[in-house]
Image (tube, rainbow, N blue to C red; front, side, top):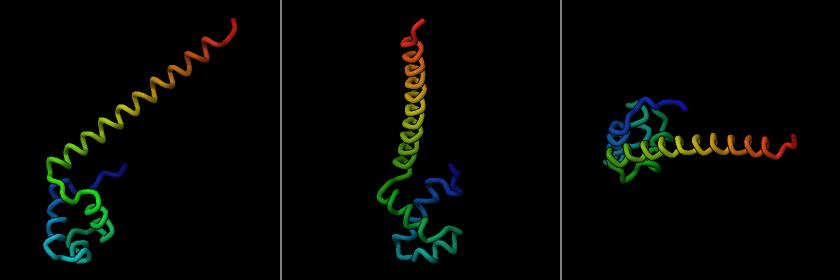
Length: 88
């Protein structure tokens, strides 16, 4: 996954400027992002604080870790079942 150039506080600052009345095209020129990126940020982060965004990132990381752990256990379980069902 591509790492963004902006951290959470910078994204919130840009969104506050957008809510204050600047247009998405002005902000995109200032910060070097597309206007669709600003709209996507608004859809994802509107109404959040920096602490909320950090907690969201932590939960996403934990969720992906748990999914990988489940996939590993499931694979091991399937391999063991295959081994036990074979006739010797």
